[in-house]
Length: 85
Image (cartoon, helix red, strand yellow):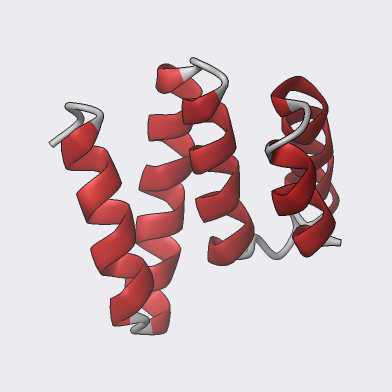
């Protein structure tokens, strides 16, 4: 599912935004930092920086708990780029 969203992002960012939001909503009971990461990138590309930052912060928090350095670094870089840290 996520690969489809990433592919579609290049074609229709608004549709990709709806789909990733739905994926995140469907996993809200057990949030996945990799979904939140993609949500942050899609929202940023769509011009929704505020929601991109919120998703990246949540992804960073969950990636930190999971000890996933790659996602910690990616989220930190994006948050710096978007002026959140």
